[in-house]
Length: 245
Image (cartoon, rainbow, N blue to C red; front, side, top):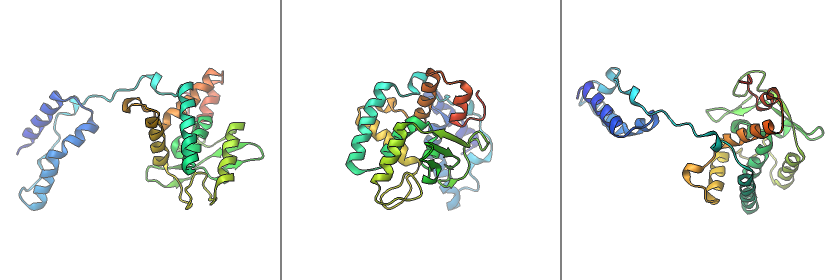
């Protein structure tokens, strides 16, 4: 098997089935897997796929960007979603349900949301300090995505947000340092929030292509602030962006 054979195969596949690089990486396992195995078994001296660069990446289909209308939650969707989250909380007291509701006020990155601690909340002055997040390895670290002064911010808490925080603290049997943890004290991670949101949307009858993600909550908050006349610089500060662009 020569490199040119593999390149021809890749080109034929991409011509017949246009796909993104992510999808093709899954498809090509049918070839790369046996080649790696053959090399380990000593049946071939080298893996031809790794031997040299092949010319096929220009055929990748670019990932389509969803239209802006699907990037935010609309008012009626939020009402229905909140009802489902409340049903979920009533059923098993999973605080992730309340965390998702809270984020429609805060607009945090999901990594920032799941890393919140009680020490970040100033109940007297109704503020919360954002300066920590769960990173790509799953660890909680004391910096935010931009790793700049813009990311460290103090946000005002609305009455609705304060009510949610009081509910969490009042109803918890085990109160740990993190806002969002299970009954054993284990912190809920980013996946917990993403999966719960997806389950709630599916419960409401949303189809797979219609599902909106945790980052859409963040865009919704920004859109609402803009619609209510907040200056773009204030929206930038609230979201923790480095610049207003």
